[in-house]
Length: 339
Image 1: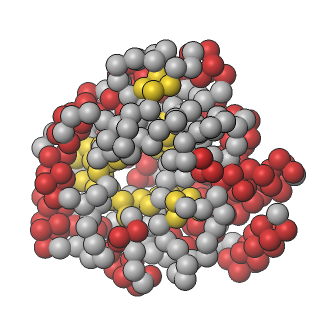
Image 2: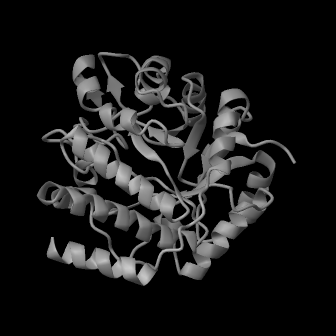
Image 3: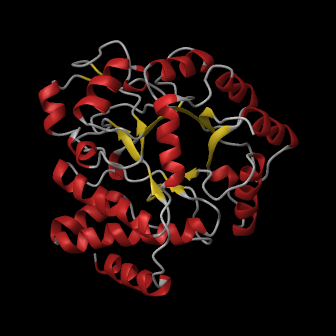
């Protein structure tokens, strides 16, 4: 069997087309990601994730990702799962009662794991470790636990532990910090002018405290104090000096979506830039075949440290803890009803 390439891919619809199956079998992405357009009935989602894995030879350790945060970034919604609160609402519980806030964050992630694992989804793009500054753009907004690095660190840690207790792996985002953005990086390039000292005292703190997690997603943001010319996703300086250096993260680092317009150039140039900067993986989300081909033509097979990190992820999926779903759901719903 041929080796995996350094990218993750989405698909267009509720099931794989013949062209998508042929592409995945030939080009061998390391994993997959689902979006709202891929979500119908639960049985359909389970069939889709099984189809994806079958293209790569099967195996429960093939990563299938989703953004299931709660609030407005929740790809699977009622009636199939409950509507969960956003991170800011959980942060408010923490500010009122630290232990209750940590429990709420853990419980919500543990419930996500119940919801997702039965559908064949084994990675949640959570926690959001961005420390929100006043006036932050809604692209982050209430997706952040709060404006204090200590709160974000504590709540993010609890959320990650809840996922792992349920058999899922977390992805920290958006490393090294997206909380100062005043524009939407889906459309424009955010530029942050904070000093390195300010960033180290605030934005980088949650990531540094959680540096031993297995995966992280990069931020499409320029930090002028570190690299005024390139966003973190395509900055070798940010990756080497900040993410691998100051933060000390040696896990698998993937890009945020390569299709986002914060990045310059076409998809091919963006993909080359991401790999050249030292990231392990290009994430392509939209299922557009022409773009998927451009990605795969411009990323290498997994080798060296990237292969080591990718293998650590696939070996790192924990066994679920056997908890009582109904009891945990009742506890969580009572907690948020009071809040």
